[in-house]
Image 1: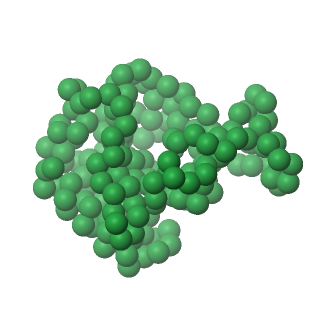
Image 2 (image 1 turned 30 degrees about the vertical axis):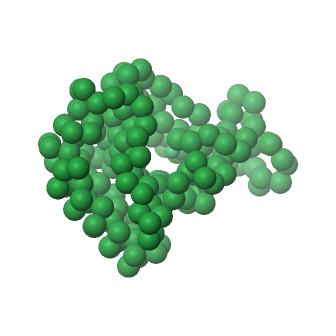
Length: 177
Ligand SMILES: [Fe+2]
């Protein structure tokens, strides 16, 4: 692993150990932007020859955060989802990702039902990162060849998360992005 990645993990551990709230995540976002400005790291993990798929680069035993790299051949527009009780910081390495934030209009009382309103969309271009706090609902849209690094507060495969269906106004537990 390149030196910049070791420095990034050390800086994230320090930030998350000393700031348990949103300030810690803001520091992770800043550190991720620094990491993505390192050409050696980007070439090694997110370059043109990177294997398509999702790889976990690091799991922090102490604070529980995960660092994953997402390498895509084909573009995709995903459904709105949250990250359960976790937060997520996305940082763009190649191409772009449009992030759309959604607000929930219903109170969640009716099982399986969810009514979402589109709030705002912003674009992550290479070198830029964005933070999604615990409970935030977002959807992602990226073109062919997009690559990004994602830091999550915990292993999202191990916790329940919500995935929303806009057309059916429904919500299901599961999903990963
Ligand atoms: Fe997400």
